[in-house]
Length: 485
Ligand code: NDP
Image 1 (cartoon, helix red, strand yellow):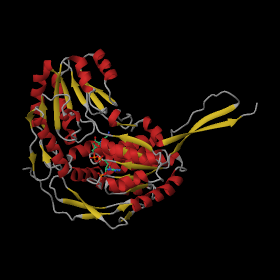
Image 2: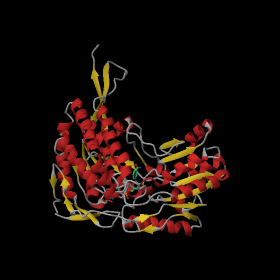
Image 3: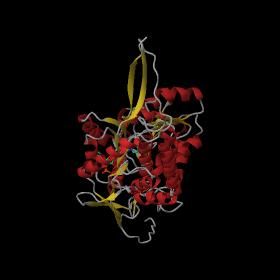
Image 4: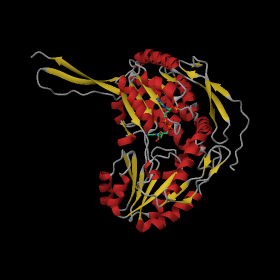
């Protein structure tokens, strides 16, 4: 039993944010839960197609004016938004911890400051968006200009709501787009607060809307809406395929940040203690509810025993508790349904013949599961192939670098990979051989607003962050001007 203390607070109902607060047209709401207690945390407006229509209409109007706003002014407002997010770091971190179950210390140190960073970084791009002049055959002055797409539909999951919202909003707004955001049904509160902060800094009404609701209702309506020029989606691979099929009928632009089953590879020459210690946070940071989680730990047989000793000890030492406690390192999983899914994978691991070295127990109240380490997992086992998106680590032994690469590349995903080695040559060969959008060497789970991020294969396509995302949120117009000789 985990000890949770909560002061009694009124359970509020939150409206949609479309040019300000307003209920869903249907008047319907749905509950969202505190994962630490299983109690209702708030009620959210259940947005549907009509609400999405309203939001897109408002975004179209606001976006047309916003695109003409002096880039310096766009930059100033986005910077101010970053400052305002930092100003509210304690409040936002608490909201995120209550709503998602993540430890408040993580939200305070990472989610909220990194969301602010994203606005700081992209505010700079507002004034640096230029085209090219290109020499062509003939008497022509030929150049390109970048233009905003118009209305961007953003759909995000529950594991890092405000941070992922920032990643969608900041570049889109910097270059002159409007955004309609469909936050996750499990954890929408920080996104709603972000919309309020957008208004507070002076972003025009309608430029950013937040339509809470279910994916198959509000989300599907957003993807299908003809007034939306592009969908920026982060979520599961299966949902990504549904989104892609729907976007295809309108030939909508698409960016898909999907699931992963990332290999974290410890070679025989690695600093074993450092690698094994890092493997614990690589697998269990944010309860393993992280798309890049190092959920497959590939270990050279020569050092396996040494790695396992540090790994199991480190895993057992992780402090599981109330997400609002500063000491907590592991909070509850986001929902009862997700907890049951994760527990299903713990049962599957044993059925498939792997050894449960530590963890896997469910605890109440709420949706806690102790971080689980399975050893002797076969690379082709379902546990090693499917994304659990929770605190379940598969340890897979290998013999030598070639086998490590073969196993690492043996899933359908290609989001990220980690390599631990002291040999620079080996590191470079591995970087080339690994099928992944990001490779970390002697570190893991590093992100930066300036660093392009995305996957290959079933992990999706398109890039978020860095200058790379500018191609995703703009179109290039090519101009030919005849210059008589
Ligand atoms: P889902 O794919 O279930 O949901 C993601 C979002 O899509 C939610 O807002 C959801 O709404 C919405 N949605 C669901 N169905 C539809 C639909 N038919 N049309 C439009 N939108 C829809 O993912 P989870 O929320 O369970 O998140 C976990 C997944 O996200 C994992 O696979 C993880 O790997 C991935 N992820 C990827 C990241 C990356 O950058 N590559 C980063 C973080 C997570 P609702 O909330 O109602 O379900």
